[in-house]
Amino acid sequence: MTALPAPKIEAKRPWNAARIAGTALMAFWIAAGIGIATYLYSVYNPALIAQYGPRYLSGLWITIQLVGLSVFLGAILSVPVAWARMSPNKIISGAAYVFVYFIRGTPLIAQTFLIYYGFPQFRPQLEAIGLWSVFRDAWGCALFAFTLNTAAYQAEILRGAIQSVPRGQWEGAAALGIPRLLAVRKIILPQAMIVALRPYANEIILMIKGSAIVAIITVFDLMGVTRQAFSRTFDFQTYIWAAIIYLLIVEALRHATDWAERRITRHLKR
Image (cartoon, rainbow, N blue to C red; front, side, top):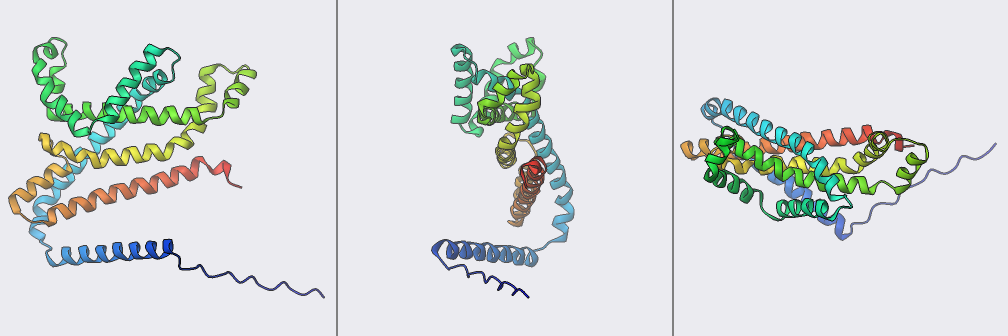
């Protein structure tokens, strides 16, 4: 009769500086959350919620539209920009580098102001080519600025992800006689997307938080509605509710990213 092996006793984790700091930080955020919840409960105003709640939903929808469209259009624009960045032609790669360098090196609010206040100076030229109807509206200017901004960042994400794929994958596809475009679609991009997923999600989150600046140019997105509500009520909780909504959006995106990552990497787990 063989003796059963003794159960393993896991050693307790030591309380080092990193664990103490992490626990203290977690306790701080829990205390802050309890404090905010207590404050909102104490100042809860049903009339305020009834009056401005639908406007918050309308502003939230405008924010989602603006970010969604700009990210989608930016993704389309990022493909030729990323290709140009990887081009062996120095003129093409240099032009793409200047575009990416300028966009990534200047604040989004400055780019938005340049378009919102600068393009009206060229109204006759824009009317001549039929684009004034787009840029005479603050929403159109914001969409254009956000599209250019996220296109530059997405181009760098895509370029880095493609270049992270081992060269042997390209060589193997060529050795099998697979056309280059088919190899990119079936072999390179699926591997690149695993690398690019998290940076893409971070870019979308940054765009959502950065979208609040369009309130300055009279777009009534979520932050624009919040500023309007505060200017009429001088109630600080209007900004707290906006912050909570932004936080919920970010958390939803984070969980969606985790789910997508588990789906596209399930073949890598054993």
